[in-house]
Amino acid sequence: MSIGYPPDAIRLPTHLDLPHTDDKPAENVYQPEQSAMLTAALMPHLDRLHPDDNYFIGQDCGIY
Image (cartoon, rainbow, N blue to C red; front, side):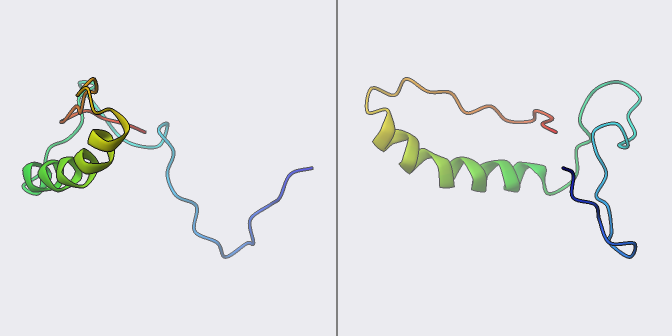
């Protein structure tokens, strides 16, 4: 059984709807600050889960 959207609902784009020309994510002026904030938010949790520092935080990667 599938659940349909109401006729007036706004559908968000999927990875098939987003434009690209070179298969690289688009950068913007906020990207460095957003990366730093996300890293700062993740590190305490990852440090607790992996006290041996065996984890990786990647930046400037496109995830859909």
